[in-house]
Image (tube, rainbow, N blue to C red; front, top):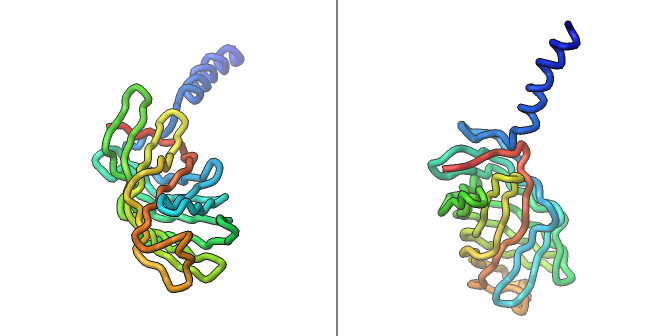
Length: 189
């Protein structure tokens, strides 16, 4: 009898756990996003690229209305490019991920983190500030947050030590990279 009762109670519980795709963001849910592969920042004017091997974003996911994700911290580590090492520091936090559309076929929210800003310090002494918005998406299946390139990232300031063949005030940038959400959250309109 006990064995039958255990099997009767355990099987539905296992089925329920296996079928849950993620935590529904019905209220603010703390979430950490860890990069899957490098996160890169490419200068669209000069072609120079900074690639970071490690990046972690933390914040809160919530149901609509916007912002559907608020990033409270952002770190970028082990960054290099064009024979230089870089230290990339996030500023102007928190950053909000504002939705612009939802595709029910792919169960993906599209939008952009607005007012993002980073300070980039290169090993040659160059210091630059890049800010603007980033084109991004969050795919509910799999819990993947992606920086999709595009947006309005622009170099706002540099010091006198920056190589003009790599970076100049007014240059446009795009950011690309994928992050895995933990816990995996579900965000839908």
